[in-house]
Amino acid sequence: MEIHHLLLVIAVLLSLVLHGESGITSSFVRSEWPAVDIPLDHHVFSVPKGYNAPQQVHITQGDYDGKAVIISWVTPDEPASSTVHYGPVQGKYDFVAQGTYSNYTFYKYKSGYTHHCLVSGLKYDTKYYYKIESGESSREFWFVTPPHVHPDASYKFGIIGDLGQTFNSLSTLEHYMRSGAQAVLFLGDLSYADRYQYNDVGVRWDTWGRFVEPSTAYQPWLWSAGNHEIDYMPYMGEVTPFKNYLERYTTPYLASKSSNPLWYAVRRASAHIIVLSSYSPFVKYTPQWRWLAEEFKRVDREKTPWLIVLMHAPIYNSNEAHFKEGESMRAAFEEWFVEYRVDVIFAGHVHAYERSYRVSNVRYNVSSGDRFPVPDTSAPVYITVGDGGNQEGLAGRFREPQPEYSAFREASYGHSTLDIKNRTHAIYHWNRNDDGKKVETDEFVLYNQYWGKNIRRRKLKKHYIKSVVVDWIAS
Image 1 (spheres, rainbow, N blue to C red):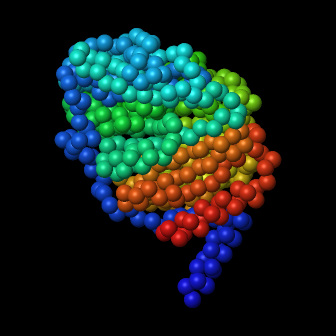
Image 2: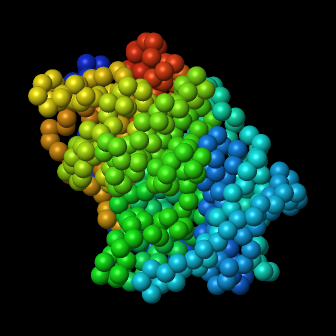
Image 3: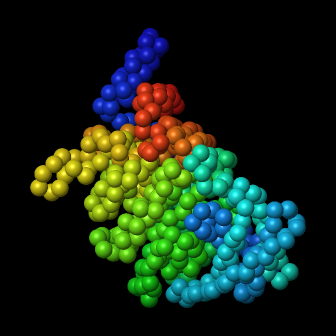
């Protein structure tokens, strides 16, 4: 009897997927760890040994095409050296790059000395070892440069958003580090230090930098800013938006002719990645709007077929949390997303996971046209991965009924990977932190909008079917 019941359920699920009549709302309930920050004396926040030893080491891409990195770190007590020694042989550092340092105050908190060093002229697809020193203290790390920009260059990205520094955050980070991904697309909301007051704000920025260092020191994280980076706190006399974030986390914005580090673009392997700022002006004729108009024109799908956009507030979201907050950016930019056939748009902000079908709402012009999102093969897939694990907890209330544009949604912690195989297709996974264990929950083949548009959709349906059945059995 149970086998017949299982076959009936599978038949229903297959019918829904094949005919596109409904998405899936997972019933999984996370139960292991509460949404509280890790105590300050925990080993994941340990300060490196040695006086004034470099800490909070992180790297990001340093140019437009992936032949440079920006290496950043903090010396807590003294400025020390901003020099990076590096080379392709471990322990033999034939090259030297010189950086700069700065420090700042936030309320009565005085930061350490933040160093940023551009290391350029690197070879593609090469492992480099690097050393940073402070007096008698030194630390050594490594990173691997991407393959040269090419339409068939394979590359695996991790996608993380709204991380924070709870035990759930630690679970996400540890699972990601075992994923085999080569760089992180970070969707905003880093430390959640703004949930503290006075000097504790700066302290929690420091702990987060040490918390993520086991990953950020060894591979680039491409940063985007969220609302928790604004740090607008008039009661403390702090009214400069993004002050902590901009001092600590730099971006290669000048390489893409941006006027602001909060929005920029890079090319990496076969991907052109555009980072937008949800909390900076973006309506018509603003600097961000003008920049994006020009950046889309610079995209060359013959060289970088994969066009990926990052933002913090999602455009399509069926959760009660932050519902419609992305509507103004949708109105400003969705026509461009469709016109330039963006492959996928990743967002955070909502502390749950959700994936859309390819839909758009560009036909409605206030006075006429379709008033609801409609299927659109030229539109991106919208994916919300705001479930890194921060102390605000999960967004567990989805709107009912599930809208037709929503393909899969679940209120769980996790991260995603996008494994680009070649110019035509990539494999996407969302990995749930199933009470401390990594579970591949949502999976599909993403066909490229430029090169893969003529591939028959029955292959895509096959992978949707697999995702649905695996998720139903796992639940």
